[in-house]
Image (tube, rainbow, N blue to C red; front, top):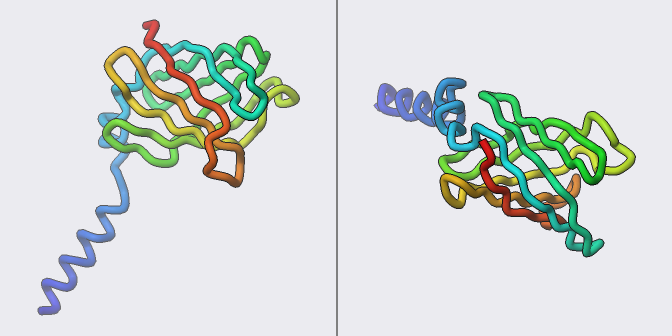
Length: 132
C-alpha cells in the first residue's frame, strides 16, 4: 500500500515538470521567422510584427511601433505556447510584461493573442506567416 502511494506521489511530482530536452522538442514547430500584421482591438489600429525563434530564444519586433523585446516561455503544449513579453527597446511605444499565447494553425501559420498585464482578456491578435 505505501509503495503504491509513494509511486503515485513520484509520478504526480514528475508530471508537473517538462525536461528541457522535451520542451525543445515540443516547441520545434515554432522555430523560424514569422511575420504579419497585428490588430489592437481597443484602439482599432494595426501594426507590423516579426517573431524570430531559434532554439530557446524568442525575439519579437514591432517595426512600425519601433519597439522590440523577448518572450519568456511560461507553458509549452503540443500546439500552443504561453509567454510573458518583456519589451527591451521602445518601451514608450509598447506595453511591457504582457501575456502572449501562440497557437499553431498549420506548418506555415500561427495565431497570436496578447493580453495586457494582469488580465486574461485578449486586446490584440494576429495571424503570422512563416518566412524562413
